[in-house]
Length: 330
Image 1 (cartoon, one colour):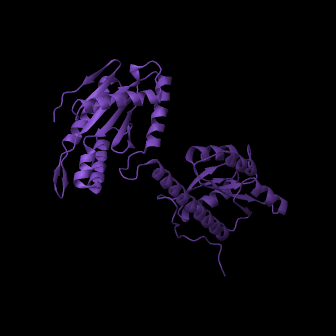
Image 2 (cartoon, rainbow, N blue to C red):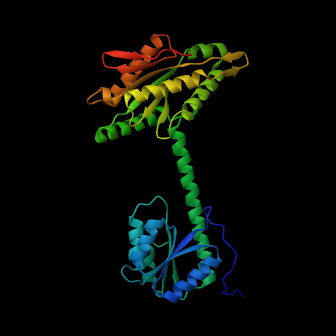
Image 3 (cartoon, rainbow, N blue to C red):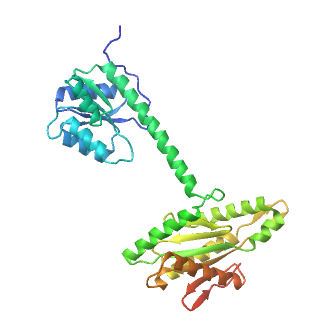
């Protein structure tokens, strides 16, 4: 025969650390027994003596496993279930509802309120253990689903070759930061980058080598930018860097740093060393009163065109009516 004596085998939680279970029960003795048992099984435990405390613990800690007594002061278990389900959360909270009620209508009421499982008191510990294992499996499946969704989202937002943000993602980020700069009355900077003579590289060494060069340049640019700056592939061999809260003089220094970092690279190919340079056109919103995303991109693109027209391997900053040129140093 099976014994009600709890097993001391530790569960493998869905997270890297032991799963924490909320035990919400105003019966102090019953709550202590549950806590002791759960800790033997390898769970962490948080206790609450009423429904309001239980809600605060779920909200503050993001708890994903909860054992709730139906009858509690301030907010009963059914009311708490409804409140948890109404709140849109990033992760799911698996709820086991405990009660002395064993009528069919009560069971339906509890499950309809959002409880995932239902147990009558006094609680059979072996049965509770099995039901918790079911909860862990469901939470584990949710974790895998969330990871898969995030991976799909990341793939959809990034350029498959360079790993940079793709065109739509970088433009969305620029639009958001431009809106923020308007609210906060700050300046946002954009650097448009083009690989010099990239068609010549493809024609001479082949498109496979061209792809490697483009990827290497993208990595070089990324490591020379701060975390809060974003870089995306705009199209072909053009890239866009978005720099929030950035004035013109600062933007120019960053663009020059990026230009020099690429010019110092030496790309090895079967047919020899490839010397690669980039041209950069920069523009900031401080040059305009009410600038749109399109106008800011056009301004940086105009500066880029000027950099290429003046010999490439240059940084040119857009200025209304004129452009400012950096001396070529490489």
